[in-house]
Amino acid sequence: MPFGVEFAPLRIPLERRLQTLGVLVFVLLFLIGHLAAWAALLVPIFLYPPSAPFLVGYLVWIYTRDAATPSEGGRCFPRMRRLGLWKHFAAYFPIGLQKTAELDPEKNYLFAYHPHGILGIGAFAAFGTEALDFSKTFPGITPHLMTLDMNFKPPFLREFVMSMGACAVNRKSCANILQSGPGESIAIVVGGAAEALEAKSKTATLVLKERMGFVKVALQTGASLVPVFGFGENDVFAQVNNPQGSLLRRMQTQVKDAMGFAPAVFHGRGIFNYTLGLLPYRRPITVVVGKPIDVDKVDGPTREQVKDLHARYVDSLTELFNAHKVEHGIDQATKLEII
Image (cartoon, rainbow, N blue to C red; front, side, top):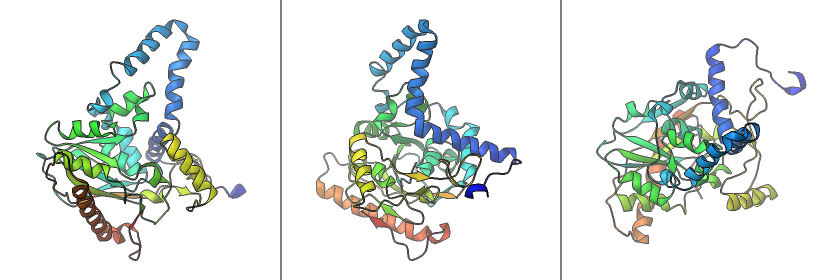
């Protein structure tokens, strides 16, 4: 290994090349998607000025007449969710989907995914694509992966994100989907940016104690709450040590509070080496979907009702984690830590 770097062999099966390509596309979209989207708009204007009126017109349209679409059910194209590229993406790790209970297609569900990890890879594969055959595993259930409003601001990128069925993660948007018809459901990575900073291999630290918003949405809409745990999500990247109180953690928290995303300092492997880069490691992820918690619709739920349902949810999630942790490579002594 020259310079301590383990390089990938030149002769690798085509299937593995395609798997790496699928992951590379995902990582690039996540890490530089915003910059690439603006470049895709501005570069043509500089290279071919006559295109400016059309591109400016598109900008005006997305920020005026189409601005509300991400909060009104989005604009999904099922073929985008079924792209073969996503099958290769999921096979890279590989990622699996495990069902523990049947879901009634006449009901609506709020899937709460944990942990966030660095990039929320398991949530994307399970709820943002058909790579894991979600529609066959849970027939009649249509999931919408909810993401930050900021991901619907860049031109072109917003169209791609919506084409995958994703919508803005705000209360209006969640309520619109959950009340739009039988089977219409949402998936929320509850821990968000703060939880990304807790992503360490073989650990299970969740930012959940004060996260009450998703529970309140479930009460307001009558949607059943479904705990989901992505075993292995925290293992696919190595994050630089950033304990609470350290200078790095304080800087990360300040950026998160100001910008809405967590600047985690991490590394994985490279495209042509197994030692260092921004691609995740080939380590398995299993998305385990728990039993639904039926919720009665409540107009104007009280704080006590929200806290009570939140406690029931945490108990259900803890039960799910304890029941499956050993089979998915987590030590029996490891406990779910809720902060």
